[in-house]
Image (cartoon, rainbow, N blue to C red; front, side, top):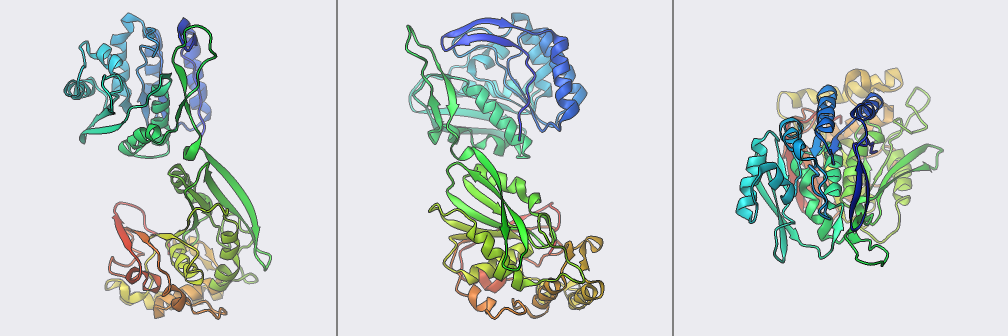
Length: 492
């Protein structure tokens, strides 16, 4: 994710105050905004200091013209140092033109008082103010309570179509400016990543409570003001790396890693059948934001893999379990944090098989749409037809040299032996890899780890909730199962 800027005002300031403000011509601001939208896909817009009516009108017309999906309005009017940053006659333009265009507004109490024209001096007044601000046209209002006096906790109030939600977090003993801008920018970044509003706002208290806020004191010279607000990189600073790996038979691929600065776990994620690892990067980024370093394995025949299935190039579960996955597992950093294993659809099934071969290697597992493909676990009449499917697809793969999954809407261009191994599970309900001497079922029986599972509610390719996980893992682990509805079907 990358940030772009359109400068609506230039300030001369230090820790003790704002000494001068220069507002560029509105036409130049308009050109900056158009340049950003003309060359980039804008996921969200965050608005800060807009000093005059002309600037507000220019920005409002640009928003109406470009129609961004998310707009966070931080109605900057008064600096932490007390300097007035909004012209008197611009208040009405702010209420009338910008608030109705916002996804959410994030005023502090002095800004809310200016917008409403009355004093906010307790939590009850905050609640009324949040509702009154929403009545001005903003779909959601995040009213920050840091300016209420008193020790202990700070209470913020969110009001939207789902009602009012209060969030309390410890008050930091520091003087800083830039806190509101940092919050609004973080919310905009979360919205751009696709998070719903309440989840985009959820981390705001933890941002401070975890001790990531630090004060940078100015050089000691005379009276000191508020220091700038700084975020220690911590788990929110994510580094994306690509590690080239090779298996013993010469197969090469790239392991995509999303690493927070201070990870609290290392997750190896296995994609679904026919899905390239890069498609899981939003998931990896979201997990890394929560401190989980996520490493995306690449299956043979997909994405960065050096192989493609054909009449002359073939593989099955044996190569995946004995050659490729151990290489990716070895590439995970040895930092003392717990190792986790997860996967989607067939990736989840093979994750269980891998855990069975290394029962002490993982502290937990996460499975998405990963029930066994055994035909008896599916409801009639679909289940009755599956034995025919499990015989037809391996025959088709042998006939053509590879399964044309993209044409069939199932998987990708899949290797013959891979499809044969998969179909055998669907017919027999036992996991095995042709040419691999290890008993996969016996290995999975020794896995003792917590499992979190997600079942896609409208996935016609998945069995029902009562279907077992591979190796009957649900009977031997603490399993949490969540049903997600209204999402696309899996791919096997």
